Amino acid sequence: MAIDDSSASNSKGKHSPASTRRARRVRMTGAERREQLLDIGRTLFAERGYEGTSVEEIAAKAGVSKPVVYEHFGGKEGLYAVVVDREMRQLLDMVTGALTAGHPRELLEQAAFALLDYIETFTDGFRILVRDSPVAQSTGTFASLISDIATQVEDILGLEFKARGFDPKLAPMYAQALVGMVALTGQWWVDTRKPKKAEVAAHLVNLAWHGLGNLEAKPRLIGHRKN
Image 1 (cartoon, one colour):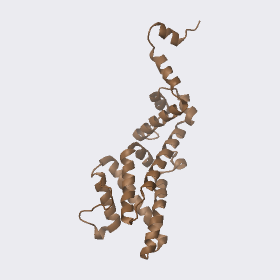
Image 2 (cartoon, rainbow, N blue to C red):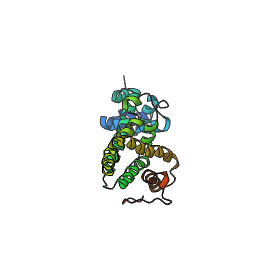
Image 3 (cartoon, rainbow, N blue to C red):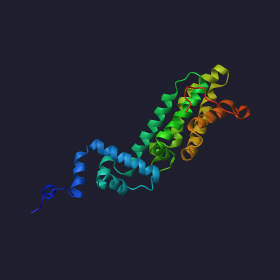
Image 4 (spheres, rainbow, N blue to C red):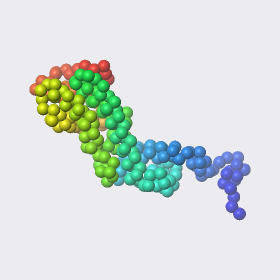
């Protein structure tokens, strides 16, 4: 005759480790479990990359069996795709939400700060976005993400070009160049974290605004953000 685990443990006055794990699984809702798996997957993908992460390890860290991961995401690819999609939306929202100034130079500062803020706050997410993976094409690569951000910037540049008598048709190319410059610098800064964020932003805007021929010896920020 089978013995109920919970009854047996209660008769001993304590829970066994196995029954404790089962109790935790019962208490966690489907939505909570999904978020837990996303958090664990996000951390592992950032540390080890897509290929270096296994469903077995994700399940083990969550304290569940492999079928639970498959139930929620259909496998590692599905989990990775959701993680990447969330990070892309987070970065896009931060960049587009930051572009509020009227002066073009301050807009450059805001765009640079937005990306550096994302790198600083969501470091794991940034590491995931800049990695290559087998499913990157289906979820959007970092290059395509930069292109999306550049699209937001090119409208601003187009108006500025037109006002200054430049060809507005060139705005998309300049937008790609500016956003790409900030993004690649961000990839370098994510590991070094030197100089400080505000100083990195100031130097990026210095190069973008003045060009190599007219660099300021001590670049300054004109916007309200100083750090």
